[in-house]
Image (spheres, rainbow, N blue to C red):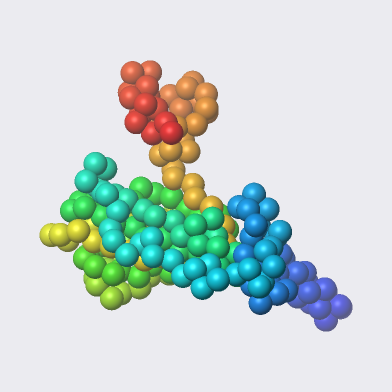
Length: 208
């Protein structure tokens, strides 16, 4: 009886795991004709080396206004990544700069500290925090869908390079999702114990 249950269960787990990942490519590469339809590929003979190289993150972003800047590198800006199931990001921090709590619903992230000292961590579904200060050359893995955050705790600017196992990892910033969306004000007042004036200030700050 146990064997009869275990085999279908194992098969189901494998199917779910396969469905949860980006699909495997069926061609050498696919340079999309347009970002709107990533599976409509150019003829391979029309591809050039420029499709497979990217120079948009050689320099740090402008973080002086907010203390934080990020540049996402996906197939929209780097055509050679299309259908390969990967993407990445460069994040730059001023002293004290913060990458607010957020999560990527479709990807695990590997974060590499290129420069500086970053307090980095994530929270699991039991609300346990896994966090430490990472220094230059150190790496942290952030499991798929886990809420995570970073703070520059060094004396100078810091930079992280993050890689994702998805072409489109998705991004949900918690403050923006909560206070920058159309969630009813009455609900937010009750959940956070805020008055209308305090809430209006937060909504103005985090609205897109």
